Image (cartoon, rainbow, N blue to C red; front, side, top):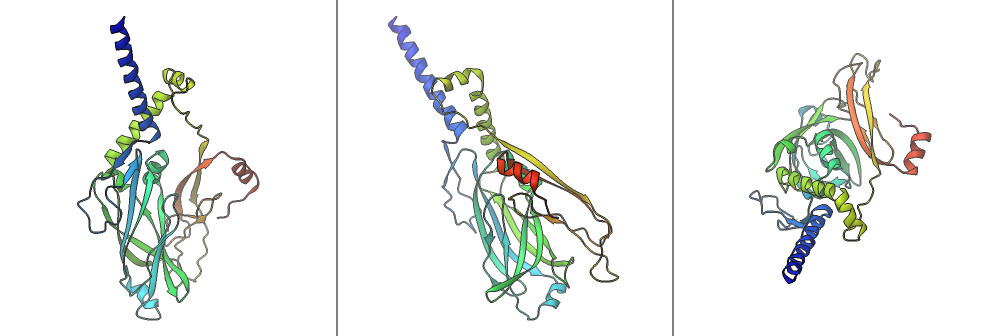
Amino acid sequence: MQEYAQLLDIRADRIRKLESQMRDVAYGTKQYKTAPSEESEFEEMDSTVELERGQNIFEIHIDKVIFSQESVKEFEDDEPVTFVTYEFFEHELQTTPVVKGTRPEFNFTSQYIVRVDDFFLHYLQKESTLIEIHRAFGTDYKTVAACQLKFRELLEKPHGRVHSTAKFIGSRPPCQGVEFATMEYWVRLRVPMDQAIRLYRERTKALGYMNSGAYKALEDAGHVPEKPPSNVNELDVHIIRCSGVIPRRQGIQPSPYAVYRFFDFADHDTDIVQSTNTPEFNDIKTFPVPMTPELDTYLRASVMEL
């Protein structure tokens, strides 16, 4: 009887340890230390920062911008003063330093702590971030060009930075619809994507176990916290095509794009379709929306302007 009692105590202790490990995995209480990076040229955040399971550090680095000959001709002076802004995922707007010249070097890095979940992975796969160039005039400014950055390549390159260039299209006459500038940039995730996805799958698997009948009994017994219910849905907005676009200047075909704002999300821009009166956009934007009375009122009573 004493031996059986000892075995039962050992078994109960092992169950408690497994329950604790499962809570760590499922609820992100176990932390992950980012490994020091070999690419330390732009390091600003402590490389040993502790992240909760399922979190990652996303970085966007704006290196330099080279203005095209067409845009340089429109500058009233030889040394324009410019800066760049962008808004990544669900984070606030970022602004680079103000730099003077036709080849401004911003050397600006923004860093975000993100949770690698379905919404974030969908964003990397399908969505894009609007980048805008502004000219500064003392305390005033005007937006002169824009482009869309996509991050799908990060899912295909599990390690290191993704270096690339982006073409800005002018948003004001006389450079509207033409190539305005080229930007050099890089993006990366501190925790490599294969490792981040593995941690995310571990967490999802643990939550699956916790929702099973056996683990539900433990929840009812008060051994683990209850998982909050999910009330998030998805709404798709499709911009397919339009026809009969009237050019602003006679004899020149327009290069149209569409912009709209849905609910309380940021403005969404389609890609620019060059030189056509019947653009085919085929743009699909998916919005993760909470099922709230505010959303219900918006869908019933509001009109989305395009």
